[in-house]
Image (cartoon, rainbow, N blue to C red; front, side, top):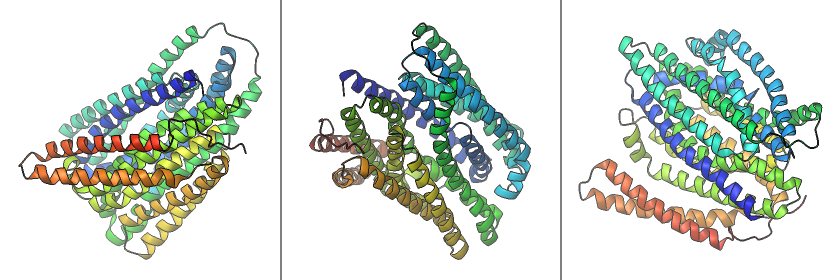
Length: 516
């Protein structure tokens, strides 16, 4: 792996990682606002997020696999003419699909809200979200273009701006509407409107950034590639990813279906909505937090591995894979241990007006390590052109999730915990499938990574708990104690994992890749 390639990958990760820090902080701000808002709360989140989950599922048909497919092809292009052909072909294909999905969602919104979700007022949210599908699809094509030419700084910047406006408009619109009405349905529509406005702003920014890049890359045309070939390759790459993402969407939507239909028969619709609101807003916000950072590796891996594979640069692939798996395990372990052992403190800090759900967070924490590894393994396999494997894993995982959810919720009184348990089982099954395939391609022993990092994490937790008890004796403010212990734990863990990384040869060029 040459120096420029190392710098490109490191810079890409740095830009995306830094932007995700600010994005998740901003996302946490407006999520906490909605959760702790007296007129919104768990019921409002149940309405708002159930609509958004359906929107996300519809989006998988037309845009989820697009950034990876476009970036993969762009990375292999030898000239600007081919890059623009890929971009224009992607627009023609996916915009057509997006229009069909958007119109379909609008027309079926009442049916979906009443018969599938079980909350009729969600139809207004779905109608509002339907045209946003088209805008988001175009955005995803722009994103793939910038990722493919290694300008991930642009993607990182625009994603941050979008989240900033989403936070500002969500708080502003909901706060304004709350002065006019106490109707939680109206407030949820206001929160949905904020999503649409922020996405439209980011679309405008992508458009102008693309124009700048077009001027910069002008006049580098050499060999040409047929549009028919581009379309075939785009669909071949994106369809498996979209199917996999669609299954993830079905996975998430099954939560609302089972809770709002099966569980509501046992405890009533209002109580079922509250449980779903707790899982969809509080639990998912915290559990998905580390995944937002880890996805940077998956995003950056695909074009980099594709480019390296085209050049038969296996030493570069070796280093990319080893680093990504190491950092993914690090993110997964520290997140799992932190959320489990400090769940009460986290809820007290973030959800002081609504502490319901601490027990669910403790259980959910164990899904994180498998989720982050599944993310990274999928990125590796997609970069190696093995797109079908993540799809197969998603199909099996989804079926397992649905069966487990039905059994646990229909036959037992597990309720919210049943959803969490089935999600963990599903992630473990997906992990086993992906790891089995990865081991055929890469000579790597996950245990050598996990065991020392777990040990480092346990030491971190022990030190944090020790300092927490010491500081409590001094009568310091609870929030200050959490910040101090968090910093101490973070520094301790960072120093330990840096040592572990060196001992495992993360920064050494050892052969771990095997040609299949």
